[in-house]
Image 1 (cartoon, helix red, strand yellow):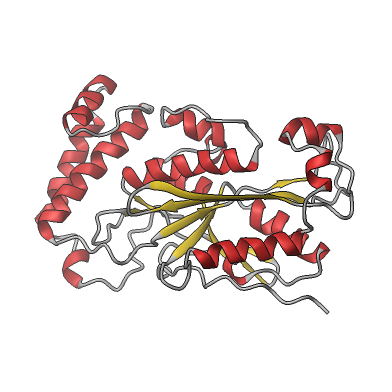
Image 2: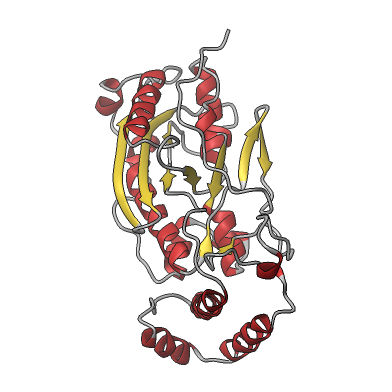
Length: 318
């Protein structure tokens, strides 16, 4: 895996030794003896027991929770970062300033019949500062569904969102306008660079995509690219896709779920906790999915790192 100047690793979609940044030849020259040292160190770490890994991590005042593979990755990245920092100074300007974590809740029925149309009923955002690695702010609004205004009992018990809550809520276009205003007030896309992040592909490619059609508005440009943390997590910690559910990701990192599962805001906060731990472990979370002409596409890990545009209210469809 290739490192950028900040020592963070790209959470790659493939394991190719390609580098998306036009960095200098020296930082990409794998013949440098430093890479031999890193490889030798990695060999030692691979042979360590879980207790040895934990005591070495504690020595460096690093997080000691997590399964053995996570601990190995954490220690390898720490050593790699130290070595590369000796080689060239950190450039802290190239990464997103903020990550906006979004996890929608939508109308649903038990068994989710294929003809059922899902409508967004909760729009949360958790604003993660990548410099301080802290949750700086949150946004949460409920949304009034229009096609199926009456929530099923299954939906109410799953999400904790009651009929009364959605009856009093604004419709989606108004909530989206409020979201955009909230993001603008925080100068996202103008003063600060940012990226959206979701747990899986569905939030953007399915729920937001369908909701925009229902509300007869165009898909918002700020949500056309995002970080799918499941992909990033699987690639970084080398775990199969079936081990990237939210509760399993937390468990493997030695953390418990905090709050009420299937509350959009609580889910978003827990996803943000995973993102923070991954950034601490040296992962450069970067955009890996996008919407193009209404279709879900993969973004190559060698694509340049670009922030999302300043949010604007999309136009109504004809």
